[in-house]
Amino acid sequence: MATRILKTVRSDGKGDYSTLNAAVVGQAQNLVTADSYLDIIIGSNFDDTTGVNVTGYTTGATQYISVSTDTTVRNITAKWNSSKYILSYTATADWQGAILINEDYVKIIGLQIFITFQTYSKVGINIKSVVSSNFLYIEDCMIKGHATVTRRVQGIRQEDTDSIMYCKNIYCFDMGLADASVGITLLGTGFLYNCGVYNSTYGFLQNTAGKILTGKNCFASSVTSGKGFSKIAGTISLNYCSSSDATADDSGGDGNIVNQTFTFNDISNFDFKLSDTDTGARLKGADLSNDTSYPITTDITGKTRNGKWDIGPYQNVSAKYVMMLKN
Image 1: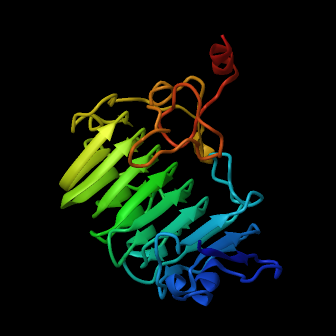
Image 2: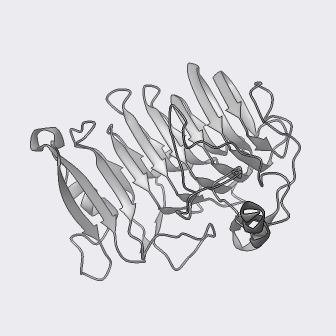
């Protein structure tokens, strides 16, 4: 059994490293030979402005790299929180990312990522180049762009066509309305479950022949008409997805709904909790706890989804709904 290598990131001098990138660079090694997995935990709230490049490792299925926030730092409210840890990075060339992933077997969990305003095309998380088609997990993250930016912004970009990406409970918002601004772009194979995109040219985009985007319980809201769920090449397979335009049911599938209006708690302050009155996503999802490809059970706040699932990262359990379950 692989042994755990635990390293902490804190801005107050009480951790092993002061930035996430310093931890990733400082621990670069052959984890397979060491028969270890690297567990990097961010343990204080600060604005981390150094871009992260995950490279220089040898990894395996049980000798993986995990980057996460601890319970005191993680934003568990489904609302952007500027007082929590934020990874924000200013690109110096096109398609640089706040996080560049150049290794297999990587997990990114519970981060807030801010794509800062600039003149370059930029990405929150870019799966740049991996060795083979091994797992990459991105879960429970919020990725914020600039609504008015004129250059391309993408929340997650899977640039490596050989990779297989699993995403759950991801919010990508304010990517802007430039020609190729996208919430989540796939050039490889991806499983996107309970993700949501708000205010972007494209919501979800598949861009490579022979590759499949599998989406379940995802929503695309306030996107350019005809581009909520879209493909340039390849295949899109959707079930129980919802869009503000007419694209969610373009590829067939079960339970998809189109031309929907989504109601959030306070969109002006980036609070994406579904309102009790929402009709575009509330109680419209499917139970994925026994999914054969990627079983999931919790929402972005960490609570277990019970009863009828909502579409998107957040599960609204109103007092009225709790009474319905009890009765």
